[in-house]
Image (cartoon, rainbow, N blue to C red):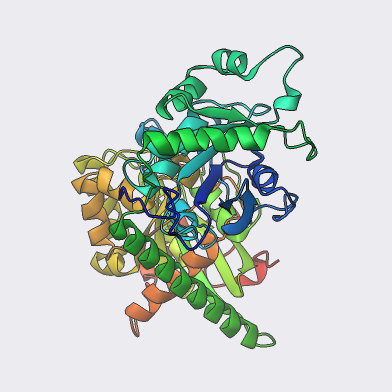
Length: 494
């Protein structure tokens, strides 16, 4: 943050332009942010009926002063972890997902508040945090506002003001002060954090002579500027550099995905690429839900223990994906996993003739990984599939919705040395899925890209070949009654 004043900001008559005031508007979804920007500008400059996806700039003149208003995309409100319980979570569910991330993870469609600050150079005089009186404001909304300002850097609160919208919806005789007192501690904290600076808008009011809400807002902005000695907020150059690097990385990722899509379109009319995946892990980790998420529909029965291997197939992102779900192992030791279950795991690999491309080791993000659990997982893999299985193993984190806005990389760092050692064993191949939304998770396509990258890394060893002993009489059964010698004609190809 830089505290800077200029001739135009302080009203110097030598300035070439009228004294300027720059307003940066932030807020959550459906907060009335865009309508408030239009109210300040006195015209429908921005489309209030559509979701704002990129920052937009508008300018007007109020009492001889040029006013620049920047409308920004809504901040994301983190989901409440208590509402996202997963039936298949095991007894090791921890509190890792409860800790809010200091910065939201970037996505291909996200744009942080830094871009809005950049669009009103050299920086905003006031940051308006828009809050609708018709929507609840609890701890989740408070954290979202705090994260949004934190993304701009330090020193933002002294330039911030709460702008309430929808005051026409308040009960008759109820003023905004009473609403603040009755809403709860989260809203009171926000107002106090902004130095008890707030204003109320009725965006339905027409421009009339008695409509003083915009002039009154600008008077409060002037008071805040005076308190700040004419200074404005300027984003730290390091944060701008980080924002630019993140945007460049996202653009490169977007171009890579578009190139993959173009290549797949060129394959139309030819046979799709086949990927054979084997789901592995201890009991209750969400293997069945992960299989459903990848295939895009409910092929496997989740919420109950899997006793026998089940093979299913579907077309996913231009590939023919075959998945075998297997019974869960014991987390304590290989010996405590019944021999029949161990044989069934090998039998699952045999159902993916001539062998699986990738062993997906499913691990819930809500589970802590101890040294014993890690050693037991690796012992199962090496005992059942041999020492070279590590070349074909990828850690697939299930229950990804529990992460909220925490990046998976941060979760891995917090997970400790044992989790990091497990990923090193797998060549640092990992992915995270939200298994609660089958068919809607865009990251499934990214997962398949990573699997194909692993196959290329393995060179001519494109899959883990099956062994003759996996086809023993003792384990020659599965729930879809498909013998290993048969082809995949019995699979369900959608």
